[in-house]
Image (cartoon, rainbow, N blue to C red; front, side):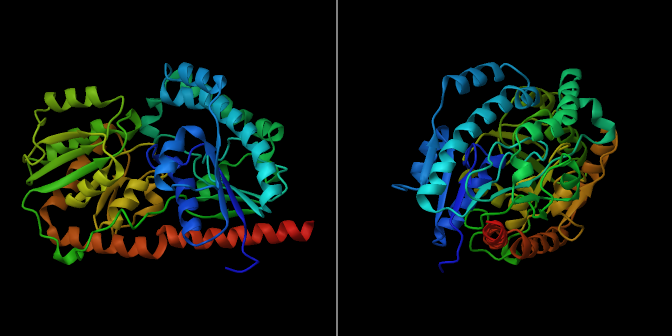
Length: 430
């Protein structure tokens, strides 16, 4: 470390591996920077305190925004609404309240600790405004990832109320970003891809850098001590889905595809995760006569439910291939996690998986009609199950790609360069 190294404050509503999704991003930035000895502080909501204390005992550089009656009211109302509607309404109001409190606290932390750059990694929506500005240090926002919709054949998956709210939000984005000008006054905006860059509202900061949103913690997501070539070829190939059971993950299509594919090659399917759709999916599995209670049974699907990350990693390590039929996956960290374990991936050619996969390490299934997707996923699963050399070749290629592009250590190297640039430009203007 030198005296020229940035002093970083990471400000995010949540920093949590338990919450999953984008909440894991600030946690990883803080974890890696802290392990390197970089002066780094974390400002997050108190609902993650228990997890942070367990991960970083006696850490004095983590500060919390306490829960308020407003937060609790928004949560109570939001839990009665569909996920997407609550995210755009009560969720937005709750996030805004948290950012207002963070803004006051961040100003004080910048003064007290000589912080030279503030990083806001989430929310990752390119259109959502930020209240983190005029903090006494330059602000870096992102990487953001969004600006997508369902594939054309699935646009009606959004209900009328959700489509109306989304349309209003998109039309109001420029106005909201003028009223809450964090993204207009930021030093740097980070975007995961061109799609997200194009979704940024008019008038925001023009210093935009492309950086993939997700990374992989190779301490957890790895092939253990085995070389990929040492892994035995399974007689019954295990496919795994990992994630929340919500409608846009399209697990119903996966169940129908598995029902077809299992007649062509020996295979089983694990569903690792839980969510609002679980009951209906279990009913569909029973209807298709593929339901099973034994996770070793050939030709059956096993619903494993929610599991801690370490257990998920172990189960994925035991599987042969990840399948992700999601229709609205901006990121898709699970794709990278599977690749880091030397597992090939079959995923919908839409959104985040397109940023990660190529024909060397996976199969991208074009999102046509529902029937077309079922047929294409079934064909891909049958072909993968029939060829151990194919799985081995793709697994090796995916692992190489992870080590070259998606290791969190590499991402933090790039982020440090972004911090230094933002701090230098801010000092020059000052």
